[in-house]
Image 1 (cartoon, rainbow, N blue to C red):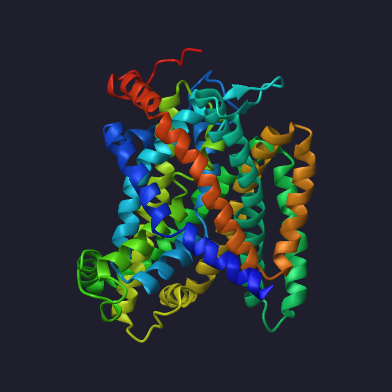
Image 2 (image 1 turned 135 degrees about the vertical axis):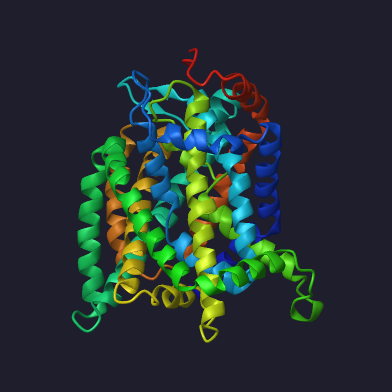
Length: 457
C-alpha cells in the first residue's frame, strides 16, 4: 500500500507539473485573445446570472446552474489550498493565482458556450450536454467523449465525494473532541451525511440546484465577511502585504542556493497550479450543469458560466491570499510550513466566532461540492450506460459518502488528482479544435450585440 501510495503521488506530481500548467494556462491565454477578451463583459455576465430568460428551454435557471457549478468548485481549495500555495510558493503565488483566474474566465466562458451549442434534449424532456457532446457532435470524436466520461465518473467518487466527506467528518470530530470519541463521531457523521445527500440527489438536478442556490450564496458571504474582518484588523499591514505579493511574483532572486530556480518560478508554479485546480476552468466539469440552464442562446449562458471563475478565484482566492499574507506579516510567529495552520491562525484572530466560521465554511463548502459532483457523475454515467445506470450510480455514490467519512484517503486524493487531469485533456481538445465555432458565436451574439436573440435550432 505504501508503494502504491508513493507511485500515485509521483504520477500525480508529474501530471500536474509544468506541462499541464503550460497547457491549461496556454489555453486560457489563447481563448482570451481569440475571443477578443470576453472578460470585458464580466459585469454584463453578473447581471445575466441573476436574471431569468422567460420561456427559454432548459431544466434550471441560469443562476441555478451557476450555483451548482460554484458548489462544486468553491471548496476547501479556496480556504486551505491558497494558504498551501503561499506556504510552498511564497506570497507571490497569490498574484499568479489571481492572474490565472482572470485568464480562466475566457475558458469557463468557452465551456459554457459549447455546452449549450451542442446539448440535446432527451425523450423525457431533459437537457444533456458537456464536453462529451461537444466532442461527439462538434468533432465526431465520440470515443474521446467516452474517455472523458469514464474519467469524470471515477473523479466524482474521489475529489467530489469521499475526500469531501472525509473533510467534513474530520472537522466535526475535532469540534466534538472530548465529548464523543473520534471514531464514533465519524460513523454518526457519515450516516447523517449520506442520508442528507441521498435526500437531495434523489430529486435530480432541480433538487440539487435548489439546495445550491440557497447554500452557496450564504456560505460564500459568511466566509468573505470573515475575511473582510481580518483585513480590517490587519489594515496597517495591507500595503506591505500587497507590495510583498507583487515583488515576489516577479522576483528573479534565486531560491535554494540557485538549485530550485527563481522566486518568480516557484511562485508561478504553485500559484498557477492552485488557481487552475480551484476554479476548474478547463477541466470540463462545469459545462455539464451549464447545459441544463434555461437560456436564449449559447453566449448568454457562456457569460453566466464565466462568473463562476470570477467569484471563485478572482474574488474569493484573492481575498484569502491577502488575509494569509497580511497575517504572516502581522504575526511572524505563525508557522508558514503548514497551509492549514496558516488559515486556522488567521481566522483565530476573529474573537469567539473566528474558528466556528472557518469550520462552518469548510463543512458547507465540502457538502456543496458533494452535491455538485453528484450531478457531474450522473451525467457521465448516463452518457456511458444510459438512464437506467443512474439509480445504481446514486446508490454507490451515497454509500461512498459514508465510507469516505470513516476512512483514510491519501491514496484516493492522488487518484482523484490523476483522474481530474485525464478529464482535462479531452475537454481542452474540444475547446481548441472548436475555437472557430467559439469565435463565430461570440462575434454574432456578443460583439454584434445580439444577446437577446433566440438561438436558431
